[in-house]
Image 1 (cartoon, rainbow, N blue to C red):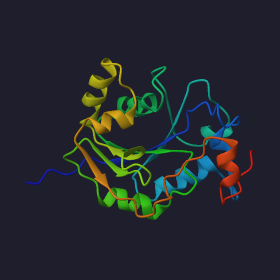
Image 2: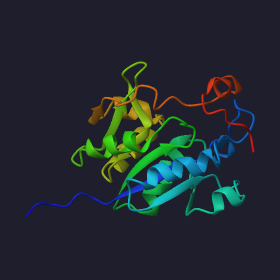
Image 3: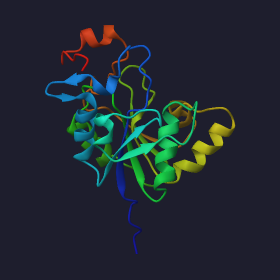
Length: 198
């Protein structure tokens, strides 16, 4: 009997403080929708359920319209949202996507899912800029939890560093620009999407 792969849920990370941007990146406009709406819509094309990760202090109608997983950990950056999702449902794998990737497409996410290795803790794309793992558009299998806990206990909470030091399935990006993020007003000004703050 072949073991079935764990179910795949989606987690859109929208709990950042957006310090460098100066405005909430999740609320930047992506055409007729917010960047958060866009990210949730893309993820929802490839997973059974999609959740939004947020800090406890983050409210507002934009996030509240989606199923929320609030951070249970502090001062861990994106790892706080990922660990909180694993606490919420430890039996599933999580496709994690940062909300500040305006160029990500459903085809990119389909390629990630098609390349998923359920027998490895992580499946991620190689960065088109430096060949390192892209941890914020990646799949975290249930078995990744023990690895994450171990690295955090050693003071390593950067998901990329964890993936570099672990057995990670690495895939080539189908579109080299698909995972370029926006962190600053300068990044926003260069964006072909012409987002403006809500």
